[in-house]
Amino acid sequence: MSGPKSASFNADPMAVLLAAAAIQAATAVYAGYAQAAILRQQNQERNDALDQRQRDAEETGHRAMDAESRAVNLEFDRLILLADKLGVADKVRATRPAAPASDDREAGAAHVRAVGGLVAQLRTILLTEAARLSAEHAGMPEFSGEAAARAALPQQVSRRQLARIEHLGAIPESIHKLALELDQTLPGERFDLLATELRAQVQAHLEQQQQRQVQEATSLVVAHTLKELGYQVEDVANTLFVEGGVAHFQRAGWGNYMVRMRVDAKGSNVNFNVVRAVAEGENERSVLDHLAEDRWCAEFPALLQALEVRGVALHVTRHLAAGELPVQLVSADKLPVLSQQDEAVNHANQTVQPLSRKLP
Image: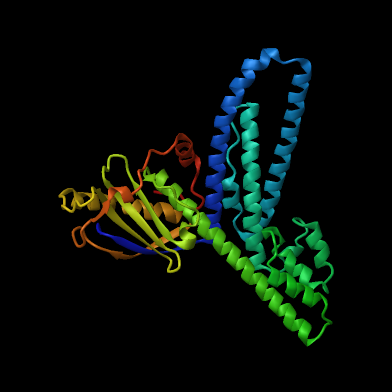
């Protein structure tokens, strides 16, 4: 199976969303540590010039950061309660980046900021999944006192339904109007019909929002996994698995060969094929084409396995032998120039751990 390959794809929603959150958190931590190193050097250089008032101000800042650290870690622990109800507590715990080994204040602040961003992502992921699975989630008192108060008033059906999607931001106008109409309707047959329709629209909104989140997370996970496996990767938009599109990747030393990945989001299909960059008008075949296809064939299973670990399953639907179709020749000016991954991405690749099982 060394020629072009096609596969259908599907994603385990919670696995891929949590994998993407872990990737972003690890990347943010490392970027923060790099910035912390710069700040540490700057602080040391001006340390002798600090007067007592400046030192007092710094100490106040440290206390505020300590308070923020306690707050974000408490919120993380509270989210674990919800994750446990959803059966993903271990996966959520695995997303939290490790604290810095030293007592360096700047590194500690970078870690707190990264965990804060992670908590915000996890809250949306978990609340959306919980609301999608259970219409009663809005009444869970440990997460929303306001939602619990609403749930205590069974006649306020619309409020309980809207509480299921309030964490997603602005409520669609159609749902808002339906809720208002329900509020103005007396109990009876029409009330029941409106309530049923409101529940259906809220559920559909949850499904649509989660699907979009999963598709965007899939784009991030695929790009990160390719880099983790050592490929240089064209910039991948987060809409690649939402709207479809094309991305290219290659290893250093591949010369003018690269792999083209074409995503058909509507059909949930992805196609991989080896391409060779050529000068305008060049159409000669090369004996190296066959070697390039064989090389990609040998590496393809590792990509499938690495993606499966992070919740993205590719099911091969077509695989052609080397030579069955010629390597596609593409004008070099229509292909990206791929550069080496930057240090931050490499470090994040090394620190993000699989969320379900390790590769053998």
